[in-house]
Structure formats: C-alpha cells, structure tokens
Length: 344
Ligand code: NAP
Ligand code: GLV
Image (cartoon, rainbow, N blue to C red; front, side, top):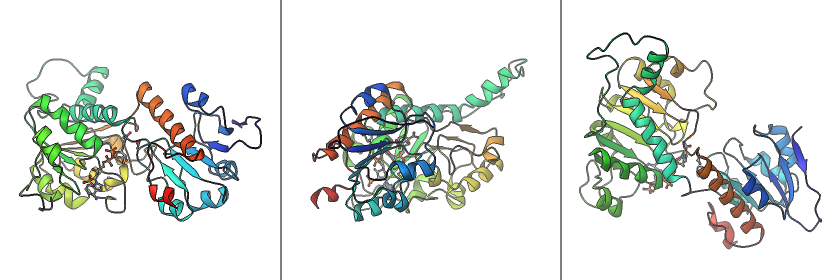
C-alpha cells in the first residue's frame, strides 16, 4: 500500500497527491499536510475516494477521473483540483464550478515538446518508419527495391491543422522547414498566426467567414488534430470525415483519443481509404490488446508520450504544484481553468 502521510500541524492544508512527482516538485510540497499515493502507478479508485476525504487540495493526473463522486467524497473542504496536464477532460469542471472548487491545468510548458512529438508521428507515418524498423529487425531486408517501403513526401505537402491553439500553432510553425502550405480549422480566425506562418483557412474569405472542417479534410495531405476533448469535438473525425480525406492522406492525433472514431479509423486504414495514421492517444488508454489498430501496418502507435521529456514533465509537475499552492494561499494561480470561481 504505497500511500504515505507526513506528520504536520493541524493548521496546515491537507493535500492529496495521486502520484509520486519529480523530486523538485515534491520538495515544494513540504509545507502542506501531504497524503501521497507514493507510486508510479495510478491510484485505485477506492483509495482515491478515501484519500480526498476532508482535503483542501487535490493534485491529480489525467489518468484520474475527477467526477461528482470524488467531489462528494472530498466534501466542502475542497478548494482546488490541480491537474498535471493541459487537457482537463478527465475533470467534471461544471461540477467543480458549481461547488466553488477551482480547477487548474498546465498549459504552455508542454507546447513545444508536444509539437516535436507530433512531428515525429508525421514523419514516421508518412515515411513508414515503424514498418521499416520492424522490417529490418525481422531480417526481411534482403536487397534495395525501387518501391519497397516507399511512403509519401512530407516536404511540399499541405498540412491541415485542426485546432489552431498553442500546440496546433507550434506544429504549424515547424512546417516552414519543410516548405509546406498550412491550412487550418479552428473556432476563431487567427490573423497573427496567419501572418506568422502564412497559414490559411481552406476557404479563408474574410474574418467573418466560418472555416469549414470539410474543406480542410479535402485539401490536406496531412491532417493533424489539436483540439481539446469536449462534447463538440468527440468523434470530430468519423467515417464521413475520413471519407473526405485523400486516399494518400495521413492523419495524426496527439490531442485526445475520442476526438477520432477509432473503429471508423481502423476500417479506413484497413481498406486504404487513407494512407496511414500516427496516434499518441486512444479512446481507451492503455490501448486494449484486442484493438484492431495494433494489427494494422499503416499506423504508428505511441503510448501517450506527447509531453514526455524529463524537462517538460518536471515543468508540468512544478506548474501543477504552483497552481495548487497559490489557490490554497488565496492567490490567483498561474493557470486557472474556471477563474469565475475566484470571483465568487
Ligand atoms: P489550446 O491552446 O486550448 O488549443 C486548442 C484549440 O482548439 C483552440 O485554439 C481552439 O480554437 C480549438 N478548438 C476548441 N474546440 C474546437 C472545435 N469544436 N472546433 C475547432 N477547434 C476547436 O490547447 P493546447 O495547449 O494546444 O492543447 C490542445 C490539446 O492537446 C489539449 O487539450 C490536450 O487534450 C492535448 N494534449 C495532448 C498531449 C499528449 O501528450 N498527447 C500533450 C499536450 C496536450 P479557438 O482558439 O479558435 O477557440
Ligand atoms: C497531456 O495529454 C496533456 O493534456 O497535458
């Protein structure tokens, strides 16, 4: 049982932390009464529900579902839920706000790292890097053949960015090095981004013109997804959308798994309706052993490692701790998700 409790004066805030964090971040928690799930593995749901009882703060990871049951178990003492991730679809923010609980996340510190990883997937999927590695290791490399393991060019291709926020824009900036044309789809038009990267709405005809995802999907050679998971973006890419893409197109997803209808994607890949995909996120994580995606050669699969560099994960943990402590001390945290709670 890896949970540990540190002795502390009763006046100190009780804080539940659902995973062992990098040492630098743990040391910043010295001043609180800490209930730590001192493990590298996720806290079992039952333990989570008991650990939060009477806590003022909860620092959690994207693997924990923070729903009404958790808020109920915590009780009225809970003031802040600090997520060590920029995505916060694991948290019922509406319920948190209703209860006056502040939710925070870790935007910005992971933007460039996640954009780098997105490019790793773009390159790997277009140039069949995973297949090529397997091919060599399986001793199938017997000679040089004109079209063996031939993929599609990245340079000069049209990159379609869906969700032109921090990460989407960072991915688009990198496209300049590959002489690509960038088109994008977002809820709002981004003139600064368009100036910086020469990115275009696929149908960009003035600031009030609503960008159409369908146009982007039809025109792009590579479609890369960077929207948060919300009720509007769940299955944003399904059978119909995949059908709009070119048969030579590649889909990359480093946002959240449920943004893509995985069953439809597996079918599209199996039938050659699109060329390939590169995925870091899945509808169910870890990806189940029986997922049809695992059997397809034309998909590169990564285990949700978009932000996984030592520096960035440490910065995420530090920001999560700073958010938590600021909220508990009555200061405005660096990254509030529901700042309206602060005005209550
Ligand atoms: P962000 O700055 O908030 O960007 C998200 C963008 O998505 C916003 O610009 C927003 O557009 C757009 N958007 C939201 N709803 C949309 C909709 N219905 N249709 C079209 N566009 C929509 O967030 P970020 O920091 O770039 O992170 C994006 C997501 O990446 C996170 O939410 C997280 O789920 C995921 N992520 C994954 C990893 C990983 O390890 N794989 C790492 C980091 C983040 P407007 O600006 O036009 O409103
Ligand atoms: C990772 O997936 C994040 O949202 O930070």
